[in-house]
Every structure is written in C-alpha cells, then in structure tokens.
Length: 422
Image (cartoon, rainbow, N blue to C red):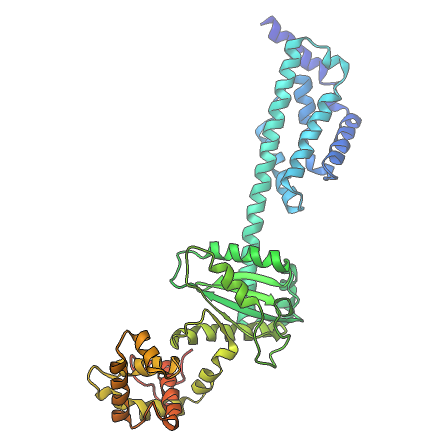
C-alpha cells in the first residue's frame, strides 16, 4: 500500500512540471521525427507526443478515445497520399526522440520505475502504430471502392456516349484520359462465362499500365466482358477512322495476356477502330461489340477480330430485305433434303472456308470425299446452283453468309422489315 501511495504521490507531484507539458521539447521531437520520415506533416502526430510523454513520466496508458484519435490520423494520412510506411516511420521516430529527450530526473529513477515507464511507452507505441495503420487501411479501402465506383460510372457513360461532354471531360481527367485525342476500345469475351472476371481484369490492367503508363488507359468490365479503352497512337493504331488498316497492337496485347490465365480460355478479342473525341469511344465500342456478336454468329475461328474482318458481313446485313430474299430464293429448297437443310448448309460453309477443296472439307467435317461431293451434288439438284461452277459460287457463298447472319435454318427467316439483330 505504501509503495502504491508513494507512486501515486509521485505522479501527482510531477504532473505540473514534467516533460509532458513542455511544448518546446515536444515540438523539437515532432520536427525531428518529421525530418526522419521524409517530411511527413507533423500534424499527423496529433496528440501522440503528449501521450508518449505522459506514459514515460507517469506510466499512464492511453484511453480508447486517444487511440481512436490516432486511427483518425491514419485515415487523414491516407487521404493526403502519405504512404503507411512513412507514417509509421514518423510515429516510431517520434517515440525514439521523446524517450531519448527525457530529462535526467526521469532517467535517475530506480530501475523498477524506469522499467515501468519503458513498458508504458512501448504499449503506447504499439497501440498507436496499430491504430494508425488500421485507420490508413480503412481509408485506403474506402478510396479504392469510391474510385472503382467512379471508374465504373465513367466507363458506362463513355461507352453509351450520351453524357454531357463537359461533364465527361471533367470526370475523365483524374483517370488520365484526354478526350480530345483518339481512343479505341477492345472487348474480350471468355470462352465460357466466368463467375468473376476480376482476376482477368487485374492481370490485364497491370500489364497494360506497365507497358503504356497510367494515362489514357482504362480497364473495366461490362456484361461479362473485359473492356479496355486505350489511346490509339500508343497502340500503333491510325489516329482516325478514315482507313481500314489494322487496329494496332491493342488486340494482340489483350489476347496475349488473357490467354496466360487458366480460366476463361479460349478468349476472343474484338477491337474497334480509333475515333477522336469523347463520343468516339462509344463509336469504337459499338464496332468492337458488333465484332464479337458477328464473329460468334458467323462462327469465325480467329481469336482477334478487327473491323476490316467484318466488312463483307456488314454490307450483307445492311440491306435486310435483299438479304432475306437472297437466302430464301437460293437456299430454302434445301429444306426438302433428307435430314433437312442444316447438313447441306454446313457442308457448303466448310467447302467455302476450305478454299473449295473437297479433300480439306472432308477432313474438317470428318467425312469421306465422296460424301462431300454427294452433298454438293444434292445442293445443285435442289437449288440449281453448282458450288463447283465459278459463275454460281459467289451467289451460293453470299447466301451461306447471309444464312449465318440471319441464324437460318435454326431460326425462321425474319420479315423483310425486321432489322437483323447484332
């Protein structure tokens, strides 16, 4: 009891004249700690130094409110862009300076008193550093979620192309997008729908940003697709949509990286042409989206689809009445074949894809050459068009492409006034 009473009397006597109330001493410790940590603002220490001084001189442990205040300082550091490591350095350096700056009257106490003071200081340091790091992490997670929301909303508006221009420009600037320049869009579709494509997005974003920097590139997701918006000239694409050459390296980069992932293969990537301005992104997106849809419908086997690959199909699809008339007039008699129209249509499609070589067609379809030629003869007998005759070949091939676009014969031919859905 006497020892406890003496200890309490020592604390009471010392509170009026201790290093814990010496503002100059603590200010020097704070400035030195800031310099040690590379110039981290002193304000981020809050009331940490008085807590240390009180622990060293009186053995007092911090209360819940004081630790919560340190957690708020960690959040403030994250919001100011101060790395958590630099903040922790600030707190550790401040503790070292406060302890080394204690006056001789404290250091000359008996060994047990010094040990108690050291334990109290270590407890303050441990609690404060943990609270600072927790607050920093909490704020960091909130900032990431907020940025992801802003990014997702920006991408949606850019791809739709219906937002106000000045608003788009202002929102795009923090993400490094200069909407006065030409951009292009790539869409990547997994071979089968994934429960989550976050891993694919993260991996792809890391590669794209490492290669081209963190400006004028956005990676996001939409409707189960990976979306990449990139500056056209950085990807080697023509700066305008006037030509129909290649769309640059964007498709190769996206496909190459996604193909490394275990899930999602085989990937298919469609790339729109480069278009200038904010609304050019929406135009490039529509081209890429049409590319994915049409490549699936046309059963294209190429993994990277560019706009120029689809020109013939787009021309055919543009005139709906003529396309329906062509398919109906040329191919509808195939319904009279035994087994229906589909086997003969598949044979024609493979035959044209194989360069009109019967042996190659037979290998692709796992048929004999005789079976292939028999089917081609049946097509001629039913339609009057001979696939072996160059004069008939173009009409047949155009009709086969049109049937793919219309989904015939799996779906009935639409009315001539109904547009082809892409």
